[in-house]
Image (cartoon, rainbow, N blue to C red; front, side):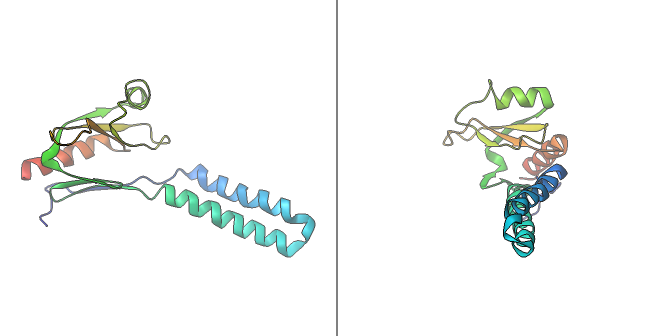
Length: 153
């Protein structure tokens, strides 16, 4: 596999506040188990915090990568030759494309806690997907990496 001219990789990690919420879930479970004694309370604190942290971590473990001649976004893998123009979206425009401008056939890699996004048109006539909506913290850099990968092909 040939590496692209501008390799790109981003992990859409959960925000820091979610880790605080994970601790609060554990604390809530500990308070629920408090009438049963100290040991069940501690088990509830540790177990509840760990379970909530696993959920937050798994939701935030999705990646967007440009590797070789492919764009890999979550479970989707597309060759860059099937991609058209990339549109960098500010928070207001991204919100519009998540809501009233959205196409039900589009592939959405959506993380509501990330305000910016990149919309990439799909030009493959055999693919019914009109575009990819990718939540990303660095939409300009992702657009540049896709353009560099297309130029290298």
